[in-house]
Image (cartoon, rainbow, N blue to C red; front, side, top):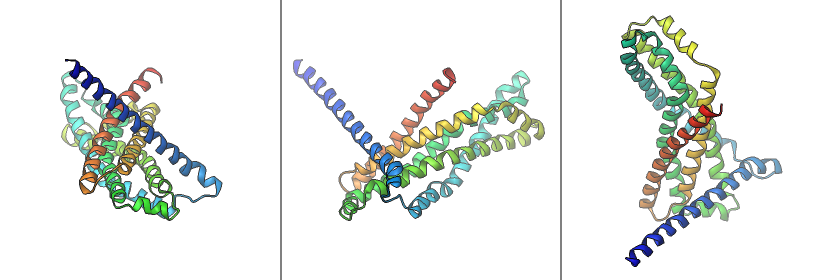
Length: 269
């Protein structure tokens, strides 16, 4: 019995130690990111490189448009159908547009976009950095006098922080459009009345709430993806496991952070 108790507390202590080690490495990564991304450019040191940054913006933004549009339009359409199913029982079918627009702006737009980006961009960042890590390309950059954080991490982090809010705004719009198509073509709601109800229900707080969430989600996805990629050990098998861990951790973090952000905006603002 005593052996089992010792084993349990030993395992608990090891888990706690590993978590503290991970948090320490993430803190160090963030410190270096702020230094090379914000402070270093004003001290005359090497910048992030415009071409590298522009390439990351294109990859995370332009190449993600189709999947974000497809998912957001589908969710807006499905949400309109589900809302109408309940609202028509109370003779409030006209308020379908209001429910869709507020839900997309405050909740579904930011969360769905973040999950899509975590699966597409976060996985790519982890796999790319992990491959460079196991092939010792990261060590080669250090040998050549090029800071890996400045060259590899800063452009990716800045790009995702810029592009995720932009994609979230587009997700708002196409989600509302998807609901509009269903409302006007399938539910028989007058198009003008549907759009009027949609925009009358929206206030500045709804849009700002969604945008604020998107910045938080972008930072979480960027930190998790880059940290996991730089922590890869082993060969191709290690890269595959790290990529899976990165996507799972990013999605869980987004959902948990969404709960905290929603509570803060509800009780504080």
